[in-house]
Image 1: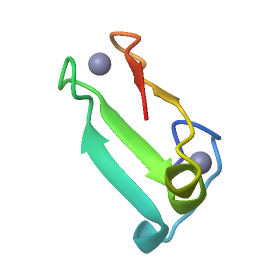
Image 2: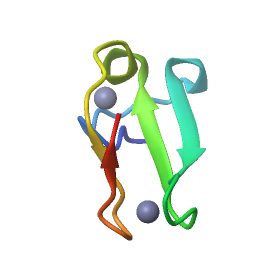
Image 3: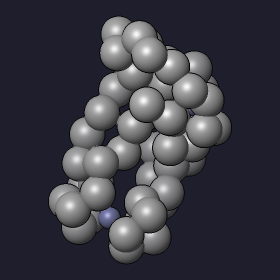
Image 4: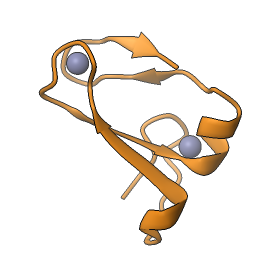
Length: 52
Ligand SMILES: [Zn+2]
Ligand SMILES: [Zn+2]
């Protein structure tokens, strides 16, 4: 898995949060713990939605 925000790769699922895009629901957003803690913006690849 790669973090949507920083593109960091990991194999440990415990360090990552995965959820559907709150706007279109079609794309899965993956965020690492670092980005979540720092509230780094993510961007949906499908609809372009950006959010924390
Ligand atoms: Zn990240
Ligand atoms: Zn979306």
